[in-house]
Length: 335
Ligand code: SF4
Image 1 (cartoon, rainbow, N blue to C red):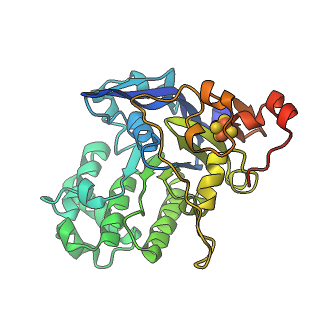
Image 2: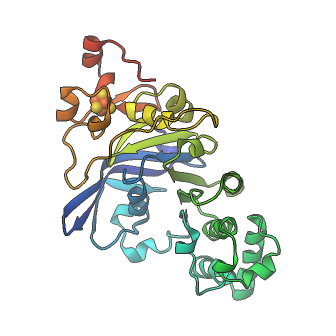
Image 3: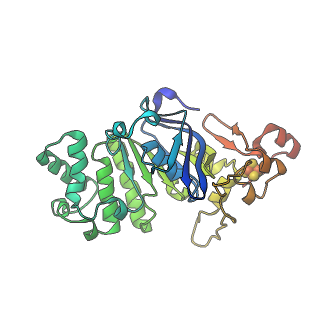
């Protein structure tokens, strides 16, 4: 449940499929969530769960073989699902900034760092070459790049992985976006640099009053940054709640599995979730997690579970939470 007036983004019943030579891959199968103004929302799940496709759908950056359907994707009241590619251009990289996992694939190897930061400033903010140069140097300073004037003249391959990610953040934030979408922004980095990059994102969010969607497979990364979490699996939302609710009042067996796979210390034995995610060419008709869930019942394999609302912000889609099932089985402890 959300306070609609305070929502920056509202995604309503988003479905995204891809037409492939093997058939139709149903990557996102009807998801609804929102992001409040100045909020950090985490979207978590294993690879292939639909989290990155969700981001590309919101940004309307899908490949030509994709088909997007949605009741609406409201960004500050405007329906992005109805916009043409041309109408999306003033929003992409301007009002919505993006950071990807691997800066080497998103930075252009043929252009200097300076040119790549100045481009969006000239395009979206109508800055002159001189103004853009000044702002680009300021942005590099802000993201902690030493000797920014020299770095402006360098090419991406001349920088370390951590520095390249800082440049990506400078590009994503230079137009002071209302929403920053970060897709696995720290996965390719070592742990110390990871923490620095997450701190930098938090600082810039505060400075520019932006909202963040942080997409990751790692609940540990989300815990320090996000106030709410959406857990995705098999193209659907399994559980959604505040970070405290997801960590301490876990309601869905899949979320419990993800939490069991985070190390609390170096000696702890991890419990990976066994089995593989569902084939979205032929999605299961019941709960997508049924084939890997130790609590799965006949009902789970036949009917997709409905959401049970557990608090104003907390909901989960699992039959164990349904009143009729609870009456029969009693309370099942999943953690
Ligand atoms: Fe497991 Fe059934 Fe709940 Fe799915 S609905 S998570 S299979 S218990």
